[in-house]
Image (cartoon, rainbow, N blue to C red; front, side, top):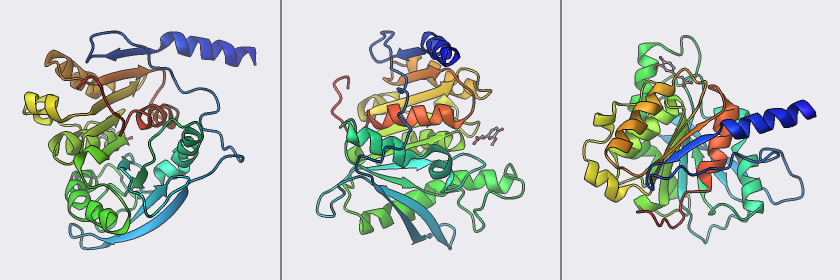
Length: 286
Ligand code: FER
C-alpha cells in the first residue's frame, strides 16, 4: 500500500505537460485511481457490432460502436473514431482498454459530452486479421489505405445508421500508435472532416510535420483540438516530439502531453480519459 502511494507520488512529480497555445506550462491532471474500474451502480452504454460494405476493400468489414448511457435515437450525437495499433483490430480497445468503462464512469460524473464512439478495423485489406507477420509491408500499407475506407465507406455508413451530426466540428479522430499516426495523418489531412484530433504514442507511420501540416494558417483556423501524447519511456516518442516541435515553432495551438509510462494501455487509457473530456466542447483559445 505504501509502495503504491509512493509510486503514485513519483508519477505525479514526473508529469510534464506543455500547452503550447498559451505558452504556459499548465498541468493536466493524470486520471484518478478507479477511473477505469467497473462501477455497477451507474448507467452503462452499449456496444453494437456493425457490418458495412467497404468500397475500398470490396469486403464486408466489422466495426464496434459504443453508444452512451441514456442513448436516444431521437437525439443527435457527435462521433469519435478511435483507432487501434499494429497488433490490434476492432476489438483491441475493447479488450485491452475497456473504453466503455472509462466513458461510463465519465458520464456518471457529467464530464463528457454524449458521443458515439466507433472502433473500426484500421487495417483495410481483404484479410484484416492481426495474424502472421503484422509488420509485413502489405499490412502496414493497409493502415494508410484505411483513409479511403473510413472516409468513403465507414463514415457514410455510420451517418446513415446512427443519429449523428455530420459536420467537422462534431467529428473526432484519435488512436494509439499506428492508430495515432493514422489519426494525425487523416485528421490533419482532412481538416474539412475532422476538428478534434488525437495521436496517442504515434508510430513511425506518422507523416513528417511538413507533410502533416502543409498549410499552417489553415491548421490554425480549423483545428479545435490537436492532442499529442506519449509515455516518457516509449521508444517511439521521437515521432510525437518532432510533431510537437514543428507545431510549437509555427505557433499552432496543440497539447503536448508527456506522461510517465511505456508503449502500453496504461498510457492509452489515461489518454482516452483526458482526450474524451476535451472534445465537442466550446474552446476559448481558438
Ligand atoms: C514500427 C514500430 C512500431 C512500425 C510500427 C510500429 C510500421 C507500431 C506500433 C504499434 O502500433 O503499437 O517500426 O512501423
